Amino acid sequence: MDTNTVPKPNKVVLQRLKGTQDVLPLSVADVGQPALSIHLWQQLEQLLHQYFQAANYQEIRTPSLEYTELFARGVGEATDIVTKEMFTFERSDRSLTLRPEGTAGVVRAFVENGLSRQPKPVKLYYCGPMFRYERPQEGRQRQFHQVGLELLGLDTPAADAESILMAAGLFRALGLPQEAITLRINNVGLPEDRALFRDALKALLFAQLPQLCDTCQARYEKNPLRMLDCKVPSCQAIYRQDTVSDFLRQYPWPDSSRVPFEQLLVLLNEMGVSYVHDPYLVRGLDYYTRTVFEFTTDRLGAQNAVCGGGRYNQLVETLGGPPTPSVGWAIGVERLLRLMTPLPPARLDVFVCSQDIPAAFRVAEHLRAAGLRVEVDLSERALGKQLAQASKRQARWALIRGESEQQADEWQLKHLDRGTQQTVASLPDPQVFFAS
RNA sequence: GCGGGUGUCGCCAAGCGGUUAAGGCCCCGGAUUGUGGUUCCGGUAUACGUGGGUUCGAUUCCCAUCAUCCGCCCCA
Image (cartoon, rainbow, N blue to C red; front, side, top):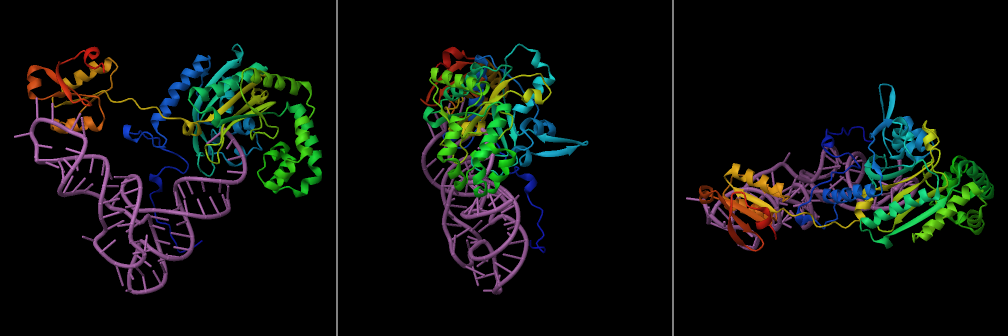
């Protein structure tokens, strides 16, 4: 470091934090650009609430800030998220963290507010910002958003199936091309069974341990299943050899870990949901039991996961609640938005050009009450200028009032696409005059 | 944390050692003191990311730094 270089006070405080985004409105003319717009966001949100509520899921909103301990215990002490990706700070000798994912907070609220006493299953969904301290790149931000579903209090193949169907159905409802999305699914067993599975896997790989990368060697001790997720080619070569692959595919899981998963696959087949049973699929969060799944796409660059989830039968207990087997998933909203096709935005119906401001406000209120989108020109400029504004804003109609109209208490109604114009009353009938 | 690319007005973008640092879009005004979308004219702006170095002279070359984008890792 060059010690005689004194960094000058800069504009940093006036900039967005790295990895955060402003979501901006786009004008009608801008739509079609790939930029993330508030317009597309609203399109998603509107459909989202309707979609979940149609299946009787209730929205839950939990704080963005929680005690650090919640995530340490909920997500898992050894996970990447907890060890290196959390925004954590100290306040009044408590450690606080901006939530890196949604499930832990939802489960905390479920326990704290006694939702565990409601009839099971409790069906919840959420949508909100999450925070992870990572290097930003395409499809990855430090503040991003997730839509999540949690189905609490039931351990049936049907519950797993519904959660997956809800995700797949949401993609369909949002108009995503089906061929762009792949469902991958796997069984990681119940904890007590997974311990044996893990030991068996370690025994199988023991001989090749020296050939594995450093990360894999560390995972061999701490979290052997995550080894399978390794991207290093030399490691993958080892994991993909027949002995390992056959082991994964043919591992004799006890009935309690195996049967419900097989029933789930039958249900998915029955429902015509296509999936890939990927024995190498493992997930980075510690709380999953038995079913894990992921929806991936090939259209988003390196960040190919759009939805991840699975069953978590012990998390609620871990966080101090009664035994509550549950299943859930989360979708990355920004990634989802990039797969969506924007609808044409609603167009401005009426632009009111007048220097008689009270009359302009009155007619605007009148027409808005009928559901029209109406804007009043506030510039007090010449009518020609105001009309130019009407065009720039791509309004369908302009209501024009100059001196003579003010005398007669009427408006000139101009259809801006056709150029036709007629005289209307001071409060024209929306049904009659703004029909087409 | 580790690689690679890129930084010139709000946006796009020329200049690549000596320029009043082009041009286009947007915005504002005028032609048109009451009628738009076309056209013509004019106008606003702390624009060369920041700090050093080389040089008589740096937007241009070198170094560092910051920001941003893409990739690794990880995840949604």
